Length: 481
Picture 1: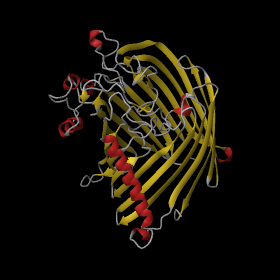
Picture 2 (picture 1 turned 60 degrees about the horizontal axis):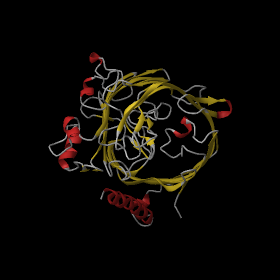
Picture 3 (picture 1 turned 135 degrees about the horizontal axis):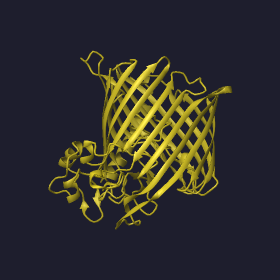
Picture 4 (picture 1 turned 30 degrees about the vertical axis):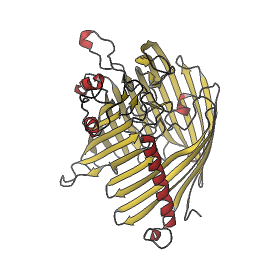
């Protein structure tokens, strides 16, 4: 039922796109002569081993097949229509063709978006920005939702960034987001729903030399059909319990009655932004939670730090500098009772054993690795340091550099095989790993030429070296035909 609804939703988006194209002649929309924005790119990448290096495959919305060399062709279109004063409609889509060990040709993105003043309603599937205060492209990736996995179909209601709250005298702005999404049926629990929301408060609301940012986030997998228990609660009452982060009702499985309904990953996010001349500085701390007791800061060490410095202009040798420190080791352990690790297993769940993985990619931080034996995540006890740099070299040659050092200790509550009939303790001794990537880009008119080299060194993966070469074009059309 859920899959058929998604198909109808996507067909409606396509139909809307065709109708809007047909309205080019003799309608109110026809007076809006904004062009179609078009992008096309080709990318080829290879590796010295069967697996692609970490930073050539990660945080790329699942577009790269990690198990072989890749040749990618992408083509996208987008157009915005002005329907009335303060109203705007945007439609777009992207086709992705991939020649690899797992070849594919599909609609990677397909969406419609309605804007009114500071509000936005969007339907479909598209590449969303990561949640949280981490840098969207140079950081490790958010512990909530990063750029790592392919996009899921969703309905989203959000503010268009930060919006000043009327009556506060520019003292307060909010950034709010709420989404309902659908997972595919090829999971341990088939056809579950996705619930996401966050709320950020910024003081003051407009640009000032110092700003304080406070946020709370929730990501929950719920509903669906369990292979042994059958349908899990997914009615209106269950939705309200998910919305409030409450435990399951009388009809819910025992695990959901004792904790929260569904599989939840949540967080508190705090940041301070300071402007010094032409440089923007930001320090942030994300506290990660996966059940109700951790909301009372039982896991104060689990989460991520970020320090960031950005210049207002990118015409500098270094215009962006990002440092991350991620630690997810406590897992709700009771240190007072001598526990080294807690009973929780981040991105895994005893009922929703498919975990926070979609199409073989972790939905949150890519450093929490998918299970090689079966569904879910198989390595989620991690400590990492990461450095991201971006700048411009002579001859207008732009570069982006990532350097990551991580320590991995396995995971507990891991599926033992593909059927996941048993959960095992897969914790391991410390394993150190280094991953790096250097990308160079040069613009020539509407064309952009990119090359990158990446390497993995350490004990977690075999040592490997990878190279990519890409060419992209950006332009516009007044009409499709």
